[in-house]
Image 1 (cartoon, rainbow, N blue to C red):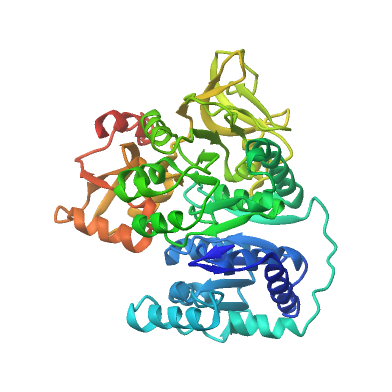
Image 2 (image 1 turned 135 degrees about the vertical axis):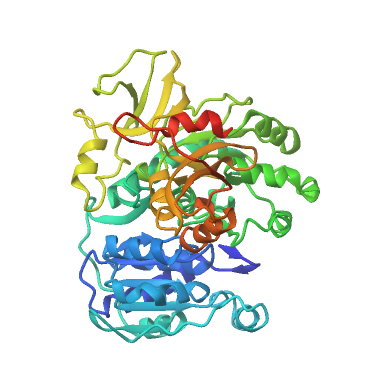
Length: 524
């Protein structure tokens, strides 16, 4: 992999992950223990992920931009006993750690794996010049006893003198607890086993490899990892790259479009996974027209609906058609995809990947005929085992014949292509991230001066959907900026409402339930 022009070889990944894995084993963690990873797209992410899996533990990916409330819930729910965190976010961890089971903390600086001189300079600059590292002091004692707090580089050094012990794992062993939005207001951990992950990697391998024939040796392939690796879409595609022995270009901050364009200009790239908003952002930057896209063979769109207008512009500029696919955290990101040799934009989510079955079902779980509208359901070896510690939710989401209900409403045509037409759930999709209105409403209801509220998604050119919040005040002096500030303090960026509107009352059913669907037409 390469990050900020500093390379890490597969040999080094092997060496460093073995050392960190041995260090973790030496901390007394039981087999299968949960280890949280709170890192952006830097080499430490993939080293830590490999270390946790090789040591026989379970990876709990955490969005580094989470607020205290969000981080506390995920650490508590997963039962994480250890965490590897970028120092820029350690002050958030400090505020919640005593209410969790975390006993081992490994703190890394941004430049820890970017070379001795350059890395140290970069870390110094972020700490002292840019002031990007807020002060923190993680307590050495907590409710579960003494706590180890160690710099990442020291953990590696200590691990180098230890032996990574063989672990007794099988296909049913849990590899990841991958958290997704919760319909009850709290995120749920999708239980993904090693068998799920292996199946997903093999499915993607079978689908993508033929498109790479013209490159020849797959080790020459350069994939771009601009989407966050803690998100299932980027995570799964990075694992496919590792299977190939390919190169992976890490982009820590894709929101910096000029910087991202500079990365793309440095060397040929072959696979670019992105959400529609990121494709749009690149097209809007005049300097992107100077990027050599002649080697680009897969422009993979996912995470949110791809628009035909963006797809046409992208193909006209790069010569590479945007290929839309569909999947979920619960399916290791795999589900359907359009054939990679299509020259046009289909407007569908494509065909099932190998080993995956897609069925359109009614509310009773009966399969519908082709052309009929119903809930998209999926069955295959990549589909999760269930939700962590939520047996009722797990039972609700699976049909009698083993299909998982997705909450998306679609139609399958006679050729097997599926088109999404609606969303059964109230979920809002913001730039590929799930926002569940119940969570947002639960948070906003605690804002002083709010009597009740409702959140809905409205179309947005940049993000696909944006959050609009309707609020009924109990305090007439409550202002829009008061609500926005409260959301800023309690919700990560993509969950915050873009629009806030005050109402005297909200539409309700005859039993008093707020009707979000009645608000959607008024929100546009």
